[in-house]
Image (tube, rainbow, N blue to C red; front, side):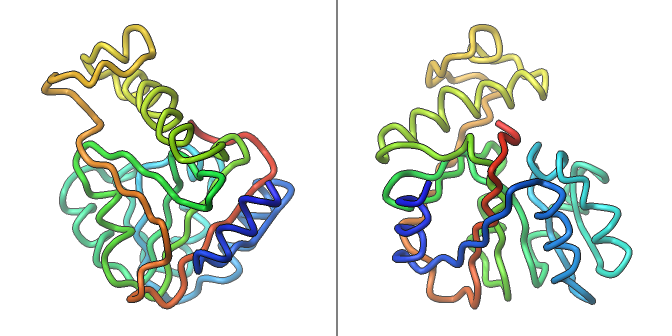
Length: 195
């Protein structure tokens, strides 16, 4: 973990570490006030249970609470975007695979702040292992959770399928912090969270 944290920082990302999801949730809700916040689809964020707490003092858009483009579009245009990552490689690269593209787009559009909330289970070895994790652990589990009709939802392995229900249509790898973002932060939690 220490090597990954060091490499994330070398790549321009801010890293804030917490032992528990509760401490991370307190940090997020304590540091965001009066902002528009978009949240990407994430079982990690669901485990933190921060939506209601953030919505008490901010305008929050999260399609896991209100599905549809009417939520996704303003989420992508918000001042702050919070999501997770499918994997973080040993080199400090952040990987995300997406079906519709809204979640990865939210991390690429200009923001005051982009926050990746990441459980320790998302940390990986070198880039090929991180990509394998994103494709063969995170994506199949999400396909199963979303009841998609894909081969990976059946057997838990990526087949690089052509299914209309495919959820891995876009891959974004952040090698370095994009120059437009004032603060791109990894909130690293020493617990297993999400897929």
